[in-house]
Length: 425
Ligand code: AMP
Image (cartoon, rainbow, N blue to C red; front, side):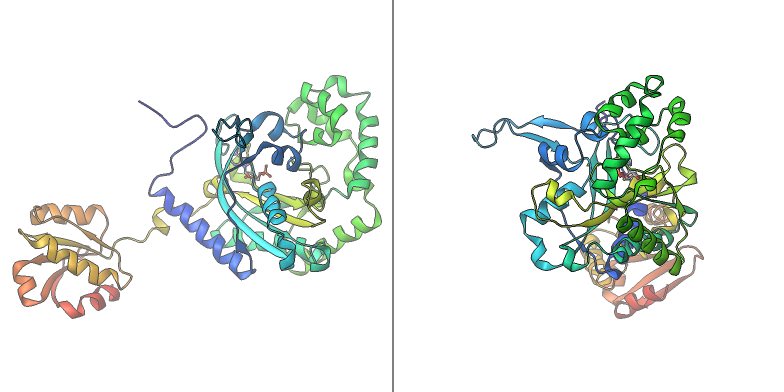
């Protein structure tokens, strides 16, 4: 038997109803904040992620699905391509490619699959889905304002509340600007020098190449050492500190609870100032439902103009895992099952079904070869509310037997009143 590749999974009904519920709710929330959808390719040139995510990140070092294109055209040959491990780099690439700065502030959202070669476990897959958004534009469009950071965080709190996740935690930090980070990196190097020998191999490498990434370390034995290291918030300049304070003040005003988390630096290199994560207790080890932050230098790192921005990515798989709603509760059952009775009745049943579906009714159909008993069983199995019998006599009389399946009561309803009867429930 051929199985789906390691770390991938099939999403089947009824669970897909939960996914649709989450996506529909997200689209509604994005609309309320005036965000618009962007769809970028699922693969991009590898260089985009090396530059946009950062050469030293776990994603780029170990986790990307990369291949060399073997297309026939000269221009395709040897090009290194990668399945997108995240969507921010792609969105910013598109922003630059389409000169979107002409539009002022861009407020964009996306929903789609991402790919990372991680060790699969609960809540961690090689193909997973993200719902994300980016606010990006020239500084004159207000893209650097702390009001944008706070609006994004408030949007996220709204979204989580609307899908029914209530006991989330918002962890907040500021990672400062490049100058702050340079000073912090120096201090970190000094603090690491006497202790790095006792740390894991990844940390030994990071201590030399990019000390900040030491905070990504998940090795338990390293944590007591990491606890003693200086934190980035001790190195913020006045502007970064003011920005951070302004974000927190708005959050307090709109009553969004948060905790400050000075060791939160997030996995990606391009973050500046605000960094955040929302976690949820029910998820176990992989407890981050979403993460995000400000990335004021990313556009320039990708060869574009200055275009400060802030964004987030929700792990949709994890969001669905932490929902308390059941698939049942968000699935609308069929309003009626139509049972064609006798030869030639499939055609008549199709006509009736077509009429009813125009009224936003959910209609399922049997087959004229089914005996009545089999139709009842089928209607029961799909949870239909009514069964409508379409036989020769009913068609001739333009009136149908309509049976309410839960109570067993049956009535005869004229053809033109059928939709109205079903809509009454
Ligand atoms: P990141 O792009 O690493 O900031 O991740 C943002 C969110 O995506 C995380 O908080 C997770 O919820 C989710 N996520 C990241 N990697 C995976 C994965 N391999 N499987 C499932 N969800 C993931």
